[in-house]
Image 1 (spheres, one colour):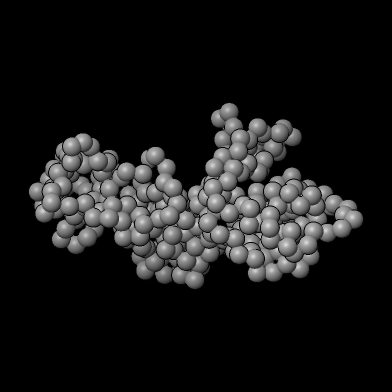
Image 2 (cartoon, rainbow, N blue to C red; image 1 turned 120 degrees about the vertical axis):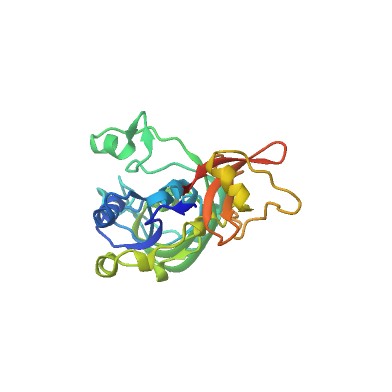
Length: 312
């Protein structure tokens, strides 16, 4: 009686250096047209690693995937800076009488752990007065970017070999690793930029499990598609009976009970969620656990469907 759109799911793609995130999506789009697809979180052309691409109805979960915690491995270079905050920009070398000590570097990095105010790079996709910041920067303008709260859970330093640092950074949505390099250099008064970046994890999606574009071209998408339900582990869960499915497909409210309660998240996130997703509940089909929708609690004890994946 009910079906889910096909193909539908999430691809954990390894983005190679030199391609934009949009380039990767375009490759996949050509393989599945007219089914839509989109990525959940931009990586710069310099960066490599995990890029989540949502297929079909799963594109409605892109903003939820962007809420998942992320991990990056990165290399910084101190003693220089650039207009892009990485090695792809116009580089300025800084003459130093004395370079900062390992202890000073570590102290500044440790001060960045927690919820901090971070200003995005001038060359970024942030909107400023309806335009992308990087478009304004390329015109020689200075975009007015406001600092915003970001969450940095940990910074592990693997190598300090002046002027190079190698680090692993665990952080929340909206964090710019280039900005960490820039701000580190400013605090140390020596300049700093990012020279390498690999995204090693988004939520439970790891770089070790990412599929290459070549493999997708050779074997197709089906062997690598993750169930859309994998995106909803950070949300509370509600199991829908057949009667609930009938109400859901009509957009009617569902009514959890003590016998049929809302369950806690399977993989709760320590990161603060945006207002769009903070109170949402994943709706699962009781018979097979398939994700059938997303609902918002309404008082008293009702769930109002917001996204419905089912169709007759």
